[in-house]
Length: 220
Image 1 (cartoon, helix red, strand yellow):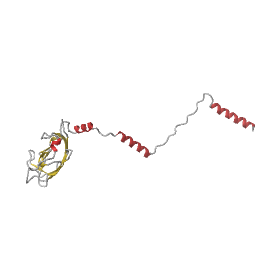
Image 2: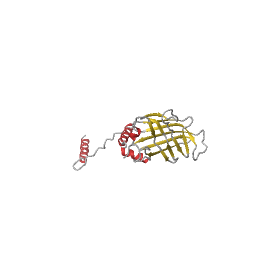
Image 3: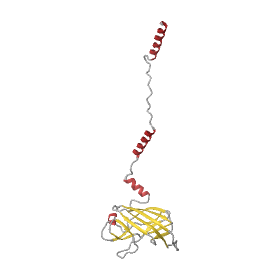
Image 4: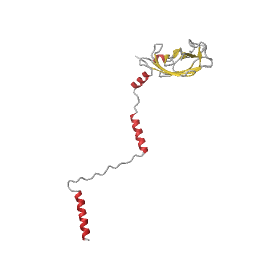
């Protein structure tokens, strides 16, 4: 019993010596809290949304200019063609009447409203011309009519692409929308192939659906 007591005292002395003067206290490792997969996804999503910044007006203008709509042009126009020909094109153009956007689209007594044009744009050389509303009275929707019993008749768009020309024909229809903010659109269906320099004998079965959208801004 005495020997066991002496042995126990000696073991205690050895342990005390290990933590004596000059000995460094051991540091416990930091506790690691595991993140569940759902938490990781949530954090990643929040970080991504924090980094998404809405484009400024300047950046929007740069994107518009890069698409072919320079700052010094009033209309930014995008035309889309589907059917016998399928293509799209974007370009800037000025108002043929020389008026600012507000005056151009303003309401009032019935008058002719010439719509934006496009001249040989893109790889298919898309050209859009001649479109007009014969009796425009202000923002709204207008069904184009090739024949009118009173006032001036409307004019369907003449669309040329890849050397082929299309316009009003049997079964064709077109609607023009002018918005209060001076933007607008044309939706035309079943435009018919016309005789042109490159097509002397139009294909009676050739048809395209045509749409065009534009924005208008006043320039200095």
